[in-house]
Length: 99
Image (cartoon, rainbow, N blue to C red; front, side):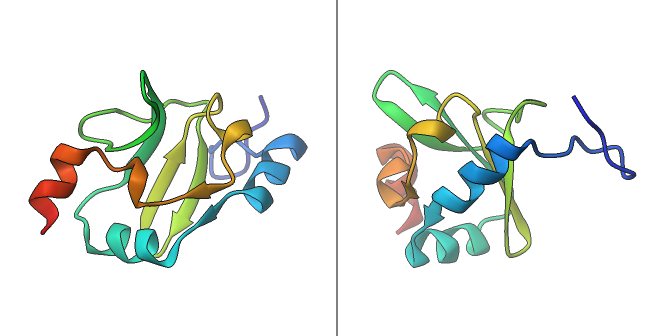
């Protein structure tokens, strides 16, 4: 694992390729901007799920995307299968309270 001058882990070439592949819908960008914490896309029994880092902490192996002032952590195990991150990844119980 390579580390940059800041001490953060540098992305590998394959991770950089994943960054170019994964897109966020405008709705998700707006949603993340209104939240008071960072989020993580991780694995659930129903597929990829978006959770606040207060519930599911990021791992050192996660891929990170900066979305405005927020950081979106993406499980390295989910990243190869993702092309888009949208509102369907937000658990229903969280969506209910966002209204």
